Amino acid sequence: MTATSKAETPVLELRGVTKTYSVKQGLFGTAKPLTAVNDVSLSLGRGQVLGLVGESGCGKSTLAKILLGLEAPTQGEVRVDGERIDAADRRKLARRIQPIFQDPYSSLNPRKSIEDIVSLPLLVHDVGDSASRSKAVREILDIVGLPARVMQTYPSQMSGGQRQRVAIARALIMKPEIVICDEPTSALDVSVQSQILNLLGDLRAEFGLTYLFISHDLAVVEHLATRVAVMYLGRIVEETQVADLFDTPRHPYTQALLKSVLTPDPGQGVPDTELGMEYPNPIAPPPGCHFHPRCPVAMDKCRTDRPYPVATPDGHVECHLFGGEQTQPTKSA
Image 1 (cartoon, rainbow, N blue to C red):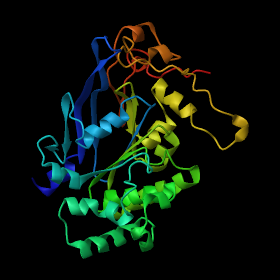
Image 2 (image 1 turned 90 degrees about the vertical axis):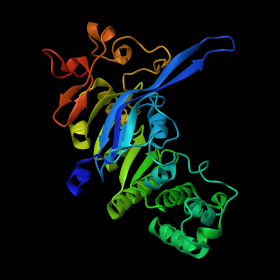
Image 3 (image 1 turned 135 degrees about the horizontal axis):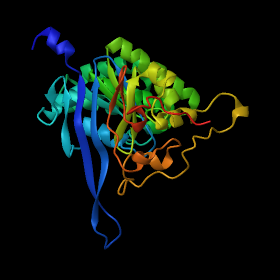
Image 4 (image 1 turned 120 degrees about the vertical axis):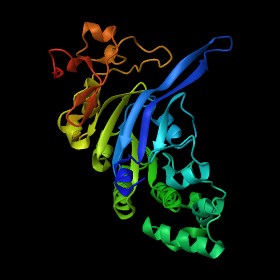
């Protein structure tokens, strides 16, 4: 492969990825299929940050597990630099893709010291000796803003923000190309969230990292992402550049998510997304467009016909409002 062709190959690519589970309801119930990820195709260039947003239960974390090789897709394929991950060596794949999990309180072994936790990937991959591993831990801790003296402490002796810095250090010590960030700031205080987001942005610039950043918070995604994919009930309903999505949200679900972003003005109160509280049952999804029972601008065919992706200037949207004569959704008052 030439340098030019390698540069043009997406560093991370999903092609028609579907993940279906068999779920049994009740002790004597029959098993029914639950499609957590439904025919998802995404492409991520080197150095980009793709923000994946959606409500809890929409399939974001399942998609993260597939990308990490922890779950195999029922259909479709995932490629890293053009190579299918199911055909790749698992140890080599782990060097290239690393996760940062949501909860820094449960993702770190409380019985291990910080040095043991951060150096574990080096030990598993048989990199260096004890002295060189200790040196590497000191260096990466310094990079994420932690002093060397924390090496002999334990997670219980650290704050949530410090623990997440440890988790970031552990993810980066093998110098991966891609980092899967599964809501890495949602368990932290707001003031600490901004520090971690700034750190992730600095690390991306310093190491040329590519992020898949999963979140339910569009305000967080706006701060870090270069592209955004909006997920609803296992489908990507809109995907585009971050500036385009915030300036011109096309899908009614995207518009509702943007309405849910809290403002610093206390007089505004809690925003009303107009979606109601009920999320569809993924075992028995609504016919047609899965979003139609909650959509304020649903048409008759939305209740019967599944929408398909429609190209936009820099991405796509999956909505009947962009077919036929009507090209822009009518925004609710």
